[in-house]
Length: 216
Image (tube, rainbow, N blue to C red; front, side):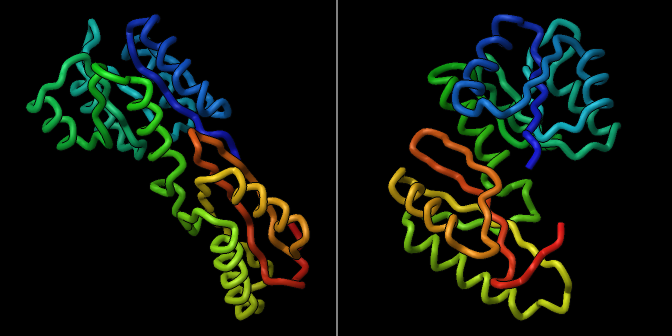
């Protein structure tokens, strides 16, 4: 699975550095590009495939709302999180009306706010429509749902090489480790990606019908 990619738009270099540090500490595999002005931001969007845009509201040559209008004209489908120094209900309402996915005020624990929003958007199934998502907490429940789904796939062998992706969430290292060891001995169940985030363990597995040979 390819790494997620974020565009961070903010004219303040120290602020960009801080937000980059917050995200990289918890989600080191995410690629973060930076832009400090409208021109660089539009160039980056036109030349890269982004999973998320973090947009500062107040910049010297434009506001975040003005930049959102430009994105509307470009007809792109990228989640945008607006970050602002002070809470303003009118600005927030206008931002959401223009399609902003979320809105963060810099006051308080900014690190937790940024990481929670980034995680929710990129790794909680909001954009991975090709995955089946299961929020679980124990090895037994994870094992059960995976095996039950594998049995369902056995009814679809006429479709050819059939694989499904599933995201499993564990809230303990013991459940995560037990599941990982179990997968090693299973036929056609493979771990493709692992993300660790503050006592939360997200595992992506691919599932094919048991005893079915899949040619990549």
